[in-house]
Amino acid sequence: MSALIRYYVALLLRSGRWLPATIFYAAIVSIGTQGSAKVGEALGYAGAGLVPSVAWLTRAALTAEPEAARHCVAGAVGPRRPHIAALAAAAIVGFVPAAGGAAGMLAAVGSVHPTTALTAGLLTMATCVVAGSAVGALCNPPLLIRATWAIPIAGILAITVLVAAGSPVNAAIRGITPIDRAPRLPLLPAVLVIAATAVCWTVSTYVAARKEFHVGETD
Image (cartoon, rainbow, N blue to C red):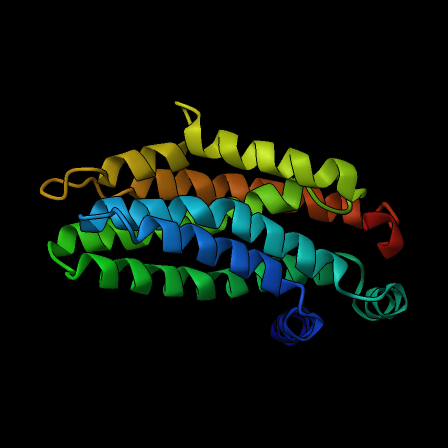
């Protein structure tokens, strides 16, 4: 599986499809650096931008492989493992802009104290990366093939994940902002997001093993 993940990471990076999502996230972070004065608030803002960005990266990873290559890989190892590897590759690449966003926000704040807020903020950002992967798994091939439907639905779902009162992502972000003195470590939200993402990956992989889609239909 590690070889497949490396293959899809390399495919995503060489395709250049990661660039729009990264620029989008960089723009969000650059806006946030203008007004964040606390560690928790800054990292919470940076984490929120990761949900749509990683969902976008997931689409890029799932659609970057040429159709002929996809058939060859599926014929060699089966249809499930390549799909899981592509989802994992997008999530792994998503941690790169997350690290950059955290560094940029902390540089803007000018402090990494209190450390409790820093720890909670970084865990929240990791939770947002995983949540973005869940959104991407649900709103991209093979579940939603055409971009005219997939992209707006992914955007709506990402916003819902961030603002819905019962969302664990919303709970994690609210738990670290705006007070740095007593931030809540978002352990329960992180566990819930991981569980939900596992379900989303399972559904997407199950459908991928049974439903053929053509790359040309995703444009």
